[in-house]
Structure formats: structure tokens, C-alpha cells
Length: 329
Image 1 (cartoon, rainbow, N blue to C red):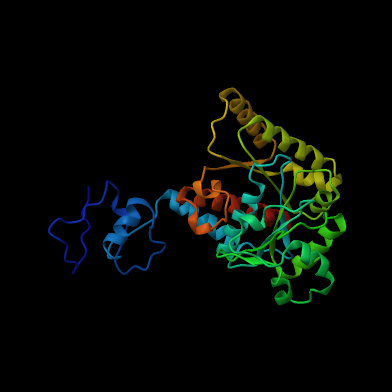
Image 2: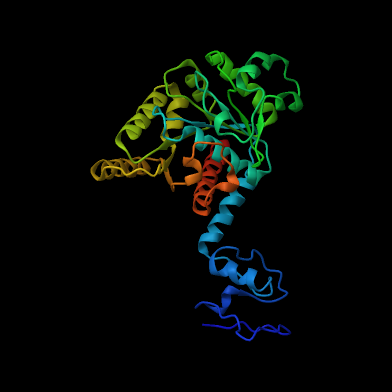
């Protein structure tokens, strides 16, 4: 155990004693070295001393800071799109779209939108903060007239994360391929990153158009047989959509999420074996923990995520951005 010695600092009767650590964890006074820890016992020491004792971040916090930096600093020469897809309902496509857009926008300071590419009305607006007046159905009817960010903003739902969501506020006509392509053309003028929340039919015209304009394929899944097999069906369908589809399906990002319900051990073991196989073949497989806030089914607020959940989703966002940057080379 070590007790930090700082010239001119009057310690209380029971001096602060740090856990076992090397003196290299302490940042010398006045050195200006950054970053300073905010997690765990290191962050607790910094806060308890009002910043008089400054401690370097641990390995996990440094990895998180690096992930945020990857998201914030990546650049490319045009607008980019992430397609979120799985044939199964209830595996977290909309949750993934909202949280991913929020994580990216929070780190990048905005210029990120999530929008529906499902055939019929989806749940995006139902998971958004706020009550939008207009949404995707109204926007599709007015796409030809959108000539400024201000006009487009009238059809979005701004989030505290700085992301914009464009979902359905009421029943709307079925999206066509032409609608999806026109949406991408307009959104690409005003956002650097878009996240497309797809439906459950990987053979629909809207989905095929979404694939044709996507830069990264992200597949939410659970450690359960049916969601996994449906995910494989989507990969097969995308792979059959020409050269671009084969390219997308060769290096998908797979996000394994936990809905909090117990899974049969045998099926879970087989699914994990298959996920390992896909990782060896080029997929990036990441896991996010169960989060009570996301499981509530109401509006999603990034600040309400648990610490472990937010850190895991930030890692997902970093992987998405790294893939987008790689594809843009």
C-alpha cells in the first residue's frame, strides 16, 4: 500500500491510502499529463481528493477512451451507412439502431441519423425520446421538396445524444426500393453517418435497395437457435445480391445481445460454436450485456444505460467506425 506524498497538501487525520499499485499510476503534480482516471478506485481517488491526487486510467478505461477516439476522429470522403438486419423480430434491431446512432452521435457531436427501411411502419419512433409530429411517411411524400437541413429537420426526432431518428409516427405506405434510394440521396446530403433499421423480410424490394447502398452490415442476434438461423438466412440472402452483397456478407459485424431470459444450454453452446466459426471466417463478433433500461420497451435515453452496457455499445460503435473507415480506403 502507498500513501501519496504531495508538497503543501494537508492530509486528514486518516490519510488516504491507495490500493496496491506502482507509483507509476500516480501522475506527478503540475505535469499536465492526460487523461486522468474516472473509473473504479482510480477515479474514486481523483474525486475524493478534489483532483489533488491524479491517477492514470486503468487498462479497461484506456481501451474505452481509445474506442471513443476512434469514433470521434474517423473521416472518409462521403456519407456512409450501416444496415442493421435480422429476419427475426425481437432480437434488438431497433434497439441497436437507436443506441448505435446515439453512441456515434454523442462522440462525433451529431451528424448521425437512424431511419427505417422496413416495409411497413416500424418501432423506431416508439423507442425515441420525445413525441414526433412528422416522420418517415410524411418525409417520403415530401422528399422532392427538401432543400435544406432545416426542412429535413421537421421530419426528425432529435435525441439528447445528438442523433436524429426518422421513424413512422403513424401507418404509412409500404416502402419501395425507389423510396429507400431517394431517402439515402437526401439523407446523405445532411448526415455523415446513417443507420438503417430494417424489417423482417430480407427479400423485399426495400431491403434489397438498403443492401445496395449499405457500407457495413450489422447483425443483432441472441444466443438462441431461431434468431441465429434467421441471421444466417439474412447473410445468405445478402450474399446472393451480387458482388456488393458478397462483399458486405464477407465481413459482417455480429452483435450478440442478452435479453435477460434463460437459454437452453445445448442450443446456446451450438450457437456459440457457430459464432466462433463465423469469426474465423471474417465476421467481427461482439457482445453487449443485458440492460434493464433497454428491456423496458419505452424510449431509449443513452444516459440511462448501465455503465457496462454503455461501454460495450461504445466498443460496438468503434468497431463499426473502424469498418467504415476501412471500407472507405
